[in-house]
Length: 103
Image 1 (cartoon, rainbow, N blue to C red):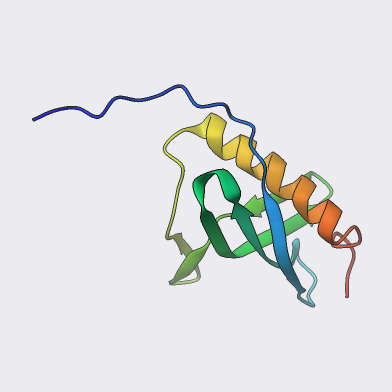
Image 2: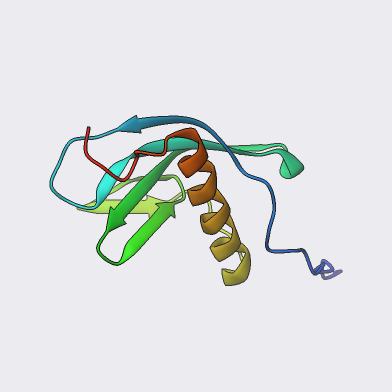
């Protein structure tokens, strides 16, 4: 059995926001966004966009499980995940600068 070689990939890469659908509510969830990572020829559909007093975050797509959500995709490296979140927030800022507010 061969072990796959892990390549040291940069943790910054272009991300494009394709759409954003805001949601009403009182919590930190502001809406759902679709993103494209052209370098990987990958689209991530239904990423939750959050904003609160502690900052902003993007959650990868998930499926309902009990009272919350279970991930359906994940990065295997926290640095890559953090790089994606930073790039996705920047892409959402460019696509919809007012996304942190309420509809």
